[in-house]
Image (cartoon, rainbow, N blue to C red; front, side):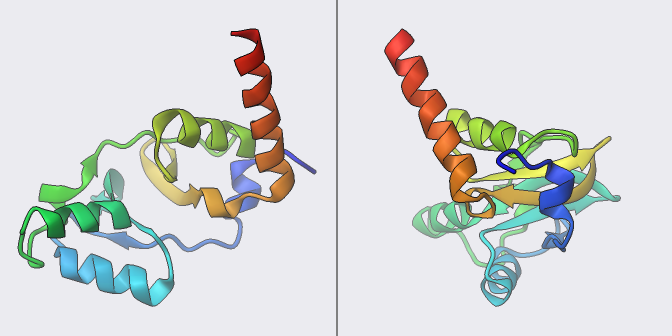
Length: 138
């Protein structure tokens, strides 16, 4: 199968979730411990933002303290997908938006997060073929 649903991809996932008050240091330690590249920032059970490894680099480059709350440095209201979208939808969104992680939500309630690494070669190959086709047409 080359176009799995988000529900299928998320089936065994437990996303890394922290509150907006959590410190950057805590988020970085949790990402390192879990081997993931993103933290979903949740307030009252609903997605408030996302904090990624790229954000951590930016925070350091700006000379901000590791005690800075995530609320100050996260990407608020990130682009999301619903559980009925497909792997190709997620890959297209990441490619078009220039980001590596997409939260999956239903009514702003967090179900999980997908990254480019969650997808099989066939799904990535299909996206590349579609991209080449569009480049030829344009």
